Length: 285
Length: 322
Image (cartoon, rainbow over all chains, first blue to last red; front, side, top):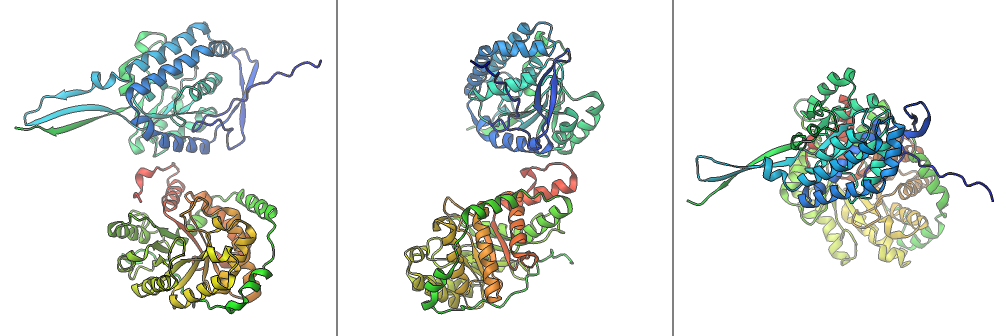
């Protein structure tokens, strides 16, 4: 009997519901916090990013048009699927140097559940019927902004990412995520969870690679409507915001709070990437 | 240039004439050499991997615009839609007048007068499908009358369909005769013959149909109607380009090639240009001898040009909807 060869996972990108390698053929080495080599992750190019935006745009009508309660159920399903892969996530967080991996995974799962609950309540809480002087019924509703780019924070590779991603997609946005450069493996695993959670392909696209290489293209892309800059390195921030202004993207960053803290989750994280539509409806005399 | 946008300056070629009688049609088909399918597909796939960058890409995108037959062939086409499309054909991007116009608009016969009025003096040609598009199986006299009508309504180019029923049934002389009659009915207008490669079944058949159409006096041979599942593919187009090359060697006459259906991205258009260049050479790299029938392709080309100009990827929000 020969010794069995271990079957190891290839860390790939997640674009439009598929798991391609980078079109550039490039990869980069991911190491654990103690320097151990862990894997070769795909190093996405600007063309992968372009494809990801195309996939996100294509997914937008269906996802934003889905009933809010359905989006809530699907987000809850993500939490369920993560629970089933708990061991894998904990091992990856341990490799990334997390102090308490189990707590990080639990908090991430809970965050999905928390935002899932907002899906069918957001309009009631942040929407309004407005008193106006005239024979009109006047109401205001939140609508998703469109395609949102998310630069995930470099540390807190799982909870940090989930805390940015869940509020963006719960309202119906579709996203292009640039994963943590140093610890991309939890994001790759999360992509595999999303692929098996009824989240339609293209709603979340995950790119791994060099943040400084991808961010300028994401920020300048004219078909991206919002940008979460939480993970943008300080030296790139000014240029990123300047590029994002070209097509007046909504730019947002995470609140300055410990991600485990209650202050790190808020309905205002959802409204950061929503637009408010006000409708004047004539009333009979 | 003045206030008017740049025209594509297509010098009209004299219309082609049949080079054989109908009785020779079976011989033309029988004489056509077989196609090496594996080699053809391999060559098309290999050429498609060519990387075209920067200056060459800009040149290719420019040629792509100048070679487009901007097409709408829907039952729902209205006068308003044709007027809007003609405006776009003349000036693809309203804020960039330096961009060239497309080669032609391609529409249904009833809308030809509308387009002819809109495009008068712009240098953009009016192409109409005719002859019982897309099947070509109506009464012959009605089909020929349709061709005469669109020619007198002001069409510069006419896209007719090969009678696949006759061709695939082995009635080559009859199919050939119909093409010759269509050639005659078209008069001095430019005649494009659609082979509907997706229905022909094999590369051998595509090559035979190409030879038949060219011998019957086609100015252009065209891959597809866009109305069936299989549209233009790289191997089909390559097969037809090789037929056009061989026909040129045999007769000295240059016949154009038009790919149509399913060409939506700039990258695809550039792949066809590579095939064209490698098969028929620089002489064919002109709207007089190469066309792409498309609608959404134009916006994709504009987006690519915008990216080359500004350095940022553009989005469909910034171009006219078609």
